[in-house]
Image 1 (cartoon, rainbow over the protein chains, first blue to last red):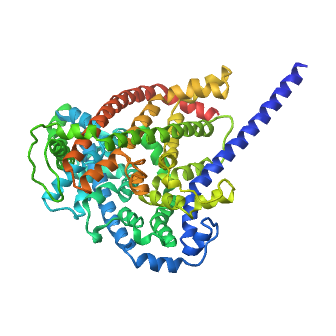
Image 2 (spheres, helix red, strand yellow):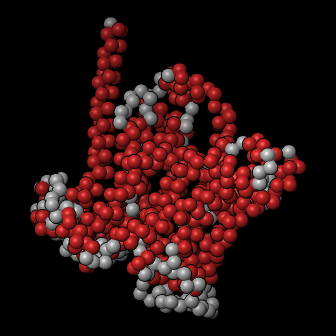
Image 3 (cartoon, each protein chain N blue to C red):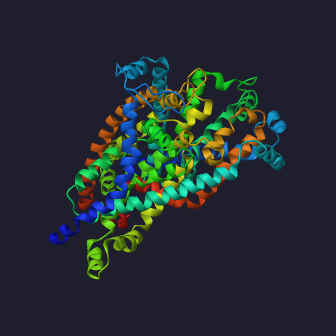
Length: 290
Length: 320
């Protein structure tokens, strides 16, 4: 009797477990569709003519008007080549600045004992959360006064001071870099700067790779600072180019707007899928560390 | 050893010089400059000269009394809450499902990749994409709702204040729940498996385990997520700026968009924008101070935990 009850309980438990699993998979698949659908509609509509879109705005199958849309798109102010070039220059150099100098600062915080070390680190923690937005008026006025608006350097150099990245690099370097290696390099007569470049930097490669991805992406996607500083069309970054698609000149050109968006989004999606493993791992790591 | 370190101390300063110089020029000076501008009469395109006001707090008073600023602040908070509550709820639910030790969910990798994807895409593009999706009269959403028979004729989604706000909140939710989920999962995976085993032995069911074991153990991470999301939410700019330019009728105007519009359009009120920025700055400082203490505690806690459970946790894994 008792056995029968136990078996029955097990069976209901099992049935319950399977039902639960079905619910989980259904929800997950729906969420996955929710992630993909807007981009899929965007890509498909970028190949369809405005008339087709007006008749039926949702279609799962592409049409043949992409080149047509492209010529309309490029015939106006939207210039993806310039956007890519400027965004590329800014993102690459600001990422290089950010990872190199953040690692350097973290090295200074870990390898050496100096009087102001603790206050300096506390200071970094304190300013980590301050967003660029709230200081923008002063930043703009300063840049305007020295005549450097429309100069990409003003979007690159601030990356040298990236407090949250210093914090991350320090947390990573703390267990990864042993003082014995530094000491033995010193005994071999290596200068401090060379020890950093040739021993510490290679050890930090995994952390640098992760941080480089996020730094690059956030710089690439940044709209606020470039929007404030750049007024010259030839200096526009990709997000500013995208904002042009909102303008009246594209008002009725649905296909072209979708194509413009696709040109900005598709490269990111492709890069994301190639690097997704590292990106997800990086997000998880970032949470544990900071 | 100590003697040697003392001799090398000056290099500590050398290595931190680039950071410090860049910080002074590009962050500290602009903060102080912004604060000063808040007390002056600086306005007008291309103007850089300014004079201190007779009533130094005038800009602050004007801003605090400005109905648009109040509305913008209200919108910012409302949109943030409407995005954060479903975001954290869904992230927690998915975390509970994905970390459940008894029912192993397959395909977690691809689900994580897909859920996180919107976060990496340029917000500017997403804002304009969603505008295109909800456009009147013909847009994918109108098409969808009409095909489903939910509406008979095209609906002006973007002219409705409530719907416009809801869409902005939805975009934020959609872009960030995957990120929050990945963070929470990594937090749960950091909990020692022993605790879960003990709960299992004691006969706790899944729901009890989640509320009594998992949640209390990721409390710090939850708080951290809350505070960073709040700071991010208070600075929400790209989506509201490009989705509907703060409209309709200021329904999606956030404080960042308000500050931008004050300073870089119309009559270029740098002084008022600076005052508004400083008000936001003070609010964010209070929130960061909170995180600062949070993380300091977390750091100590983590070190203690690592020393304590490092070995047993590994054994637990091989045993399973």
